[in-house]
Length: 308
Image (cartoon, rainbow, N blue to C red; front, top):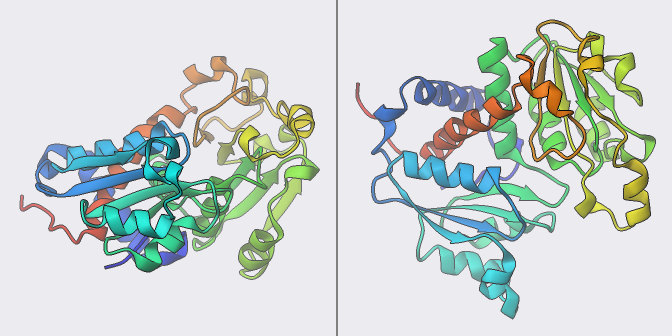
């Protein structure tokens, strides 16, 4: 039994195997409609979610399995004081695998330390979100044809953005990757990401504040929202919330084959007019997330691939 808590839990070869399986699922989803017959996933979401929770649930249903769980802490025994460790022990009596989102960093790791079933970190505070990274890598590889030799711009909340931290860690395994980190001074990436991933592995990067100064250099633009729920000071949030707005004027400065990704939800950081640009692939990214999570569930449950 193994868990998926950070991108480092899988080797580069295992990441490739996951992406290859996701590609086979995308190309023939009906072939996988019964590989998880009789299996259950528990989605334990202590924080609100639309895409991630429904994506995991859809993935399991598409594999022939079923879903249990809760969509907020208030609707579970957590509201009565039950610990994460006790909750996962109970859930292990009901389900075969669990996807957990929690506002406290490290909570899925605590759960995994006592869990009788595989635990997937579906987002822990401002720390990590590895299944979103799996989605992001699958989207990039499917649409760009590669994960090497890319200039990746990441824009917005890089301090609290758990999707950003996981994505930088995973992409740093590939050759020819260069990061352009676009954020206000107050929302730059945490020092541990800079030191333990970028500088330790000699990954080229630059930190800038203006998107328009660098958008023409990018192969991928990964937009993120300024996350109100991570701020302790509403005044500071209001000062920073509209730091970046991607509109068609900025898109005109970009390469004709640049792709725009976003983990969603968006607020004001991408103008609706950009949705019709073929380079905007964030809604396609959501669909690819289902295939990626189907592959992840199959891998963690050691489910056999169906014969042709």
